[in-house]
Image (cartoon, rainbow, N blue to C red; front, side, top):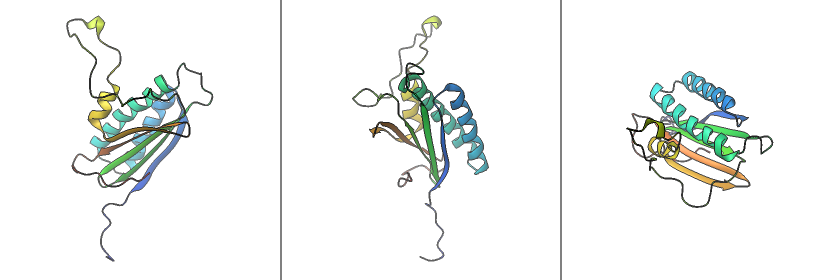
Length: 165
């Protein structure tokens, strides 16, 4: 209908390529936060984006491209699109594929609060991603790992709309 407001329009906010290193991940996270802030993204959504991206990107650095330096030109490609429901994020890398089988679940590693020395260093990543994101998926196509997820606006619960990427 002419003149009706477009309330589900999706737009690409960010498209980055950066080396698969911890320093480059830090720089990319700062770029993402600045870009989302300048686009008027709510602070809560920006914070959740930082947490999810830090976990996902560091997993790529630590697991897809191991041992470090093994794969030439190790890089991460990040695309973020937005709409009124939130953000859609896609990360791509050409690292090692994830082992076959379903994605890890929400299970956390065993923790003994009385044995601080035995606290696990890792093992929280997939549980954290599953709890903070929606429509989480990982696929492999043409030698690329493709991780996709949605981060909904806190004030817009419910279905997240169609795919932008």
